[in-house]
Length: 418
Image (cartoon, rainbow, N blue to C red; front, side, top):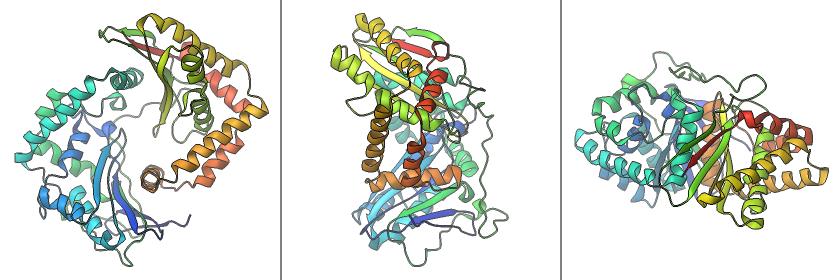
């Protein structure tokens, strides 16, 4: 794919993937998320995302909405552990307007006091709704156990009490620190204006020196979580139970894993899909649901951060079936650790994952978000062909060695809600 990349004089990196579609997906990815919050700021990154739509020096909240939706476009945003992304889908005829609005809300939001109290309650309702869903809450608590004491373990939403304490100055301080052009990527998938509009930012955000063509990336102030130790992840915490009086038991099993730059993550990527990916033929689904009828949902997931990662298995079952389900999970982990995949099974696993990736890449919106975040964090653009090649190169021994490393009982943490 022929991407165009360059850096504006104000330090803002731009990546453009030209297409002939009449619809353009564009946005700004900010290198700031939960891990960039200082003590006492838990939940502030997500709160700033909400408030960024509430008014700038040039636009009211209503005008921000109408400037995009009045043209038939869609405007949205989300916050992750390492980034916050603002984006929209709009007709190619109106890209200039969309880019101007995006730059305005990212670089010049004023966080009006009158809007803060109202938005606090919106976010608090979101927190309370989330806390009422143990199937979602257990993921956050599990991550907090694995990264205890580090911002990566914090809930993205924060707590209601903390959110209600945030002020206009808190939001301004956080965004002035992190929402800087040199810490952002502007991305466009589709037709772009022949000459990009003057993407202005407030004078106080302009870097003192930003040589044309140079990229300046801010570094997180928090200490870095050590990469997965030596030959494996951090030693697991064993079994932890929480009594929440839930109708169903909810279980997470997993460990720290590999950073985004660790080549071993490719083997885990394929193992994760074999174990509990979206296909109904995943080993855990076949065992726990299809053969034994013990669960409605069972899945495995993985995430790679800049310097560490994690993987985990989730399932929900009747309280009386927890131990049996755990034994069945252990059996599948042992199978992958003790027996290498046959050439036939390895080929089938690769073919399935590559087919899923090809279908996923057909979503232009998600594809644009993925290449923007990859460019933000690595300064490189990874093509689908390159990803397919990484998967093709995996051997049965690669998978078995990774399984032995991460699936060993002493590496695992198990969290159970009963």
